[in-house]
Image (cartoon, rainbow over all chains, first blue to last red; front, side):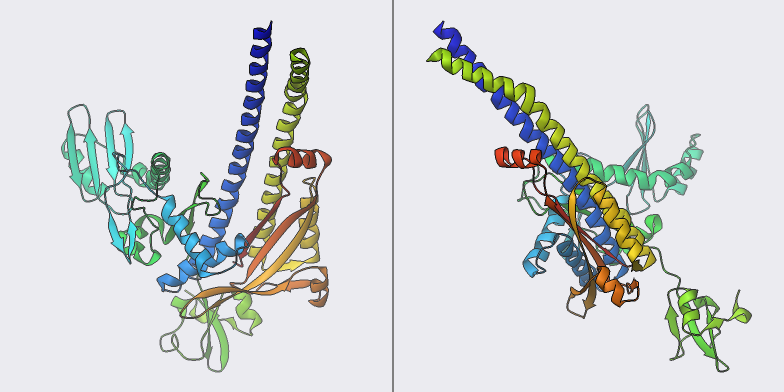
Length: 301
Length: 153
């Protein structure tokens, strides 16, 4: 009888322990889910502000980003906290050395280690096209006869394949490049989490002024991708990505011609007046009109 | 003595498994949903304000109504920051709080200048008895508090 009692007690304690464990795990999951979405929103807004205020100085946008994140988390805007924000980005994108396809390049730009991820696109069950995420170089691999072709861009690859009697739809691949990039980043993040530790060199972020040099402008326009780890709790698994495509604002130029205030688009401003000292820039025609400028219809194209 | 201990354990087990367990799960899910709704409403409101570039009394009413609809008792604070930059660094300096009094002074419409930042902070100021129980027992529920800043577009 005593044996049964003891057994019952043990089972009861185990069940209570399991219940407590499930409860705390569930709570962690809910907290993680919320923190992840909140972090993504804050990252997006901070990224947007950073790009918007970008004026050609690399420090400037990083600083704006860090200031926005400190503001969003109601942290004191100190250098220490700004460093924590930047560190969290450094920690977020890390790809383990064991990953086969994750890293192809490892560059150093402005002191930041930038690692670029190739895109592997399964064109068909037996054909794979590997594209440079930020450049034009492509590789084609066919598993049936182990054909490997390298080309400087997709059009050239199509030309070479046509010569071999194979056709691939380049337009589809170009259109899918962006989607595949997002998937590649996600794959890299999933791979990275398993072996994440502090000792390995981690990818930072891509300085926005180097994007055209990297060829990213051909794909995205001016885009800043920030992948951020929750910096409040270093044990936290919360990792998020945020991308922002900068839409070039089309300024309205205000100028004075024959004593009359006119406004028009920058490329419509007549020669000789385009850089005149009294010219003004307006965000839109309403702002120009409010300042007393009228449309320069005689210069409209 | 053993019988007595067994009875107590059985009682605890029954209460935990049949009453506390489901109640706790339900409460956690409910709290999570409330928080997500509050965050979503903050985002929608901020996007609208950042695009529009101004805040009116109707905007404040909208935000308060949406947050109240989440079921939480929430205190809202809206602040405006000015982006100050020089060659060295960038800082966000607080300019003002935006509330009904401020809007009265501004003639009903508060204009947000370009590159100024609007931050909404929400703080739960009261909690239900169930939440209080869980918080005191195992600390699974906290009072909701978060903020979102967005720059004028």
